[in-house]
Amino acid sequence: MILIVDDDKLVVRSITRVLKKDFTIQTASDGVEAFEYLKSPDCKCMILDIKMPRINGIELLMLMQAEGIKLPVIVMAGFSDFTAKELKAFPNVVQFFQKPFEIEDMLEVVKKCTSN
Image (tube, rainbow, N blue to C red; front, side, top):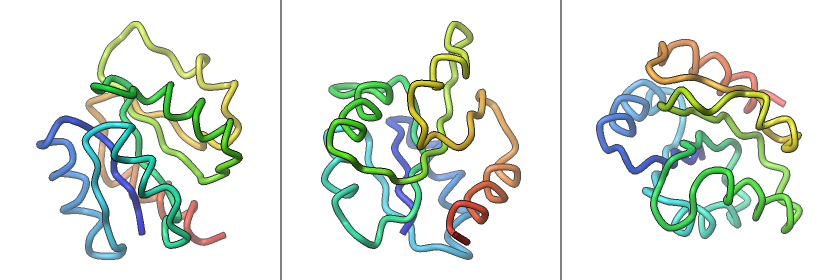
């Protein structure tokens, strides 16, 4: 299962449309909802937005680190004041995409994450 976490329904729909051909997809609109799915052994990779309500992407990464969850994470962000350098503290982050991005590029990263 690939977990897509973003409060923007259009982004979720676009990513889901491409990935559902090859993967089972679960979606969450914030970090609180996502954390429940992260406990599933079926979850193989997470695509995570940074800016969300309740628990944002950085807070979710910190929670995962505290809980010892080592799931590969692909991070995406749509605001320019966030940089990939800020993600260096999280070793399970495998890729950063600045919105907008090519979903096919993300698909390639997801395939690499799930092939291990």
